[in-house]
Image (cartoon, helix red, strand yellow):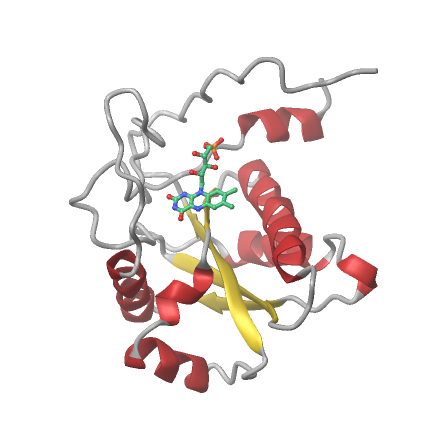
Length: 195
Ligand SMILES: Cc1cc2nc3c(=O)[nH]c(=O)nc-3n(C[C@H](O)[C@H](O)[C@H](O)COP(=O)(O)O)c2cc1C
């Protein structure tokens, strides 16, 4: 198996992070992976807002948690036992799980492929991260982190254009010391139709 395939199969969502910040060299490569992702029409409209301010990330993560209503986990239905999500553990108050780096991907509000452009950039970045030993997690509905006066003030401080919106966040950090790498859930069957 080649290295790309190995990385694709190895990547898992990480929600328990070490406190130390990721290496700048690794961050630069992860950002580059996002910048080189495909984009609809080649428009390259996605903006990557990289925040390594602990207080800001924590505040936005808490706003997001307060604005999230996930379908809570049951014994048979859960997101991850090894790396609990906010749907698995109601005690988690920060939807960004104290990740030391949070990248919010913004895209134009009136663009049909805004979400796809962000998602595909994020996957490039998550694979790059995994290949560099950095853990990552995709956080959907990015706008909910900015849905109160504090979040609105952050958007102003970051000079985010009013015609852009936060599609999602990408969490980055080294996996928490001592954690084993999560195992993937078995793949559901009969999802490939061949003709
Ligand atoms: C569109 C999308 C939205 C997601 N949103 C969240 C989220 O808000 N919080 C979270 O903890 N994980 C989120 N995830 C991560 C998924 O829970 C995770 O990919 C899934 O459980 C499979 O685990 P794996 O990534 O380890 O393979 C999201 C993933 C996708 C693709």
